[in-house]
Figure 1 (cartoon, helix red, strand yellow):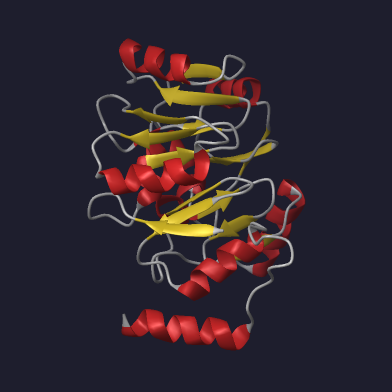
Figure 2: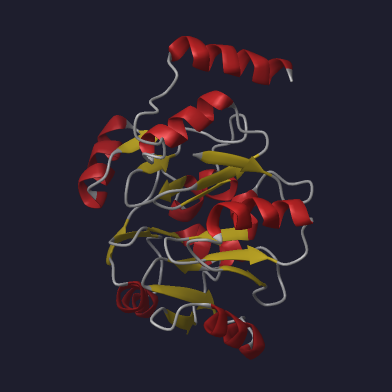
Length: 247
């Protein structure tokens, strides 16, 4: 199930949180409501860790991780690194990386097996991503945008990409990732999917502005509907979207 939430007055929750199958990082300083949405859904399964990176709350855009590891920018302080290491399970590798493109969440999109990376990422960084996250890496772009982490969201169940991605590119991405790829938006038409959506294999969080039609697409591609609970149908989706428009 996909849940709507908001970080203070921002719907770009993917900027302030990083969600994987083994842990969730959340930026310091939001209202209790933002944290409680994550904790209520996740705390029985994985640790929810409050942290900052380089003194910033925009942790979702600065780091990249999966069930095997977490890669942080070189600007991360020793204290922040220690705090995150202590909060995560012992078998998760946590690594700092020297990289010119330091907003790693914008330039890398990954699941537990494959990572899409920016075409200009350093070779050394690519090697660290392969070793730390245990993934194969592919240099690519999404609909002509080099920021693959901003314009796509990937889990082990599916992938959501920029709405203007050509069908041929989506087929190619699907064969690379070995999961279904669908084009879509979040937050009432936003193309910057990485900023508006956090997903793992059983949960999704999106901005408060996300329409029911967008949520239906997210739940469909990431297989988040409970067994025996298919989409309520086209008419129901249309009714919900009209209510959204009127709200």
